[in-house]
Image (cartoon, rainbow, N blue to C red; front, top):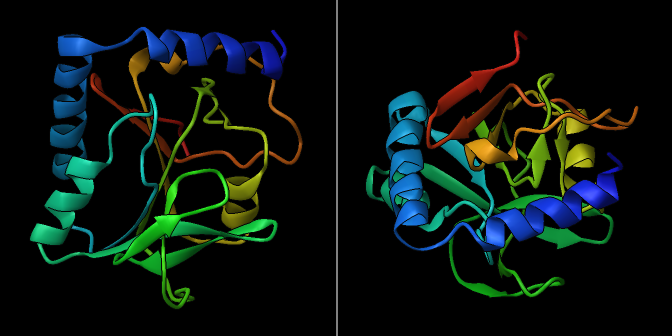
Length: 176
């Protein structure tokens, strides 16, 4: 299946994954996330919107625990981590943080996705922001989503593999 077809199919799948099932899945994702990564200190995490796996509760829990939280902001062809704080609507209608970009080391980067394959390669929204960010970054790369987003597809040579995929059912590692 081509990436464009998969994007379309998974957007529909996510749209119909609603109500109590989704709420329970998001609560399980929160629990699994804190159990797996709660000991780390710094997190670069996407601000969920639409039908994406919810990050609002994860962000709230991390802030409450006194962790360093950074949100992505689009700057030209790239995304940059910016300390959590006041947000404004950004380039794609997603809330983005104001303030200075952070250039230091970040323990965990949480990445949105539409699909992921058994080798840890993801299909995002097709702009390549995360692939460019991850290419020269030593952060632990964690995809976040629902278990039905695991699909078979062939990655492109510019795609950056993730270290793990965290879902409501647990964490999938990719043997790295």
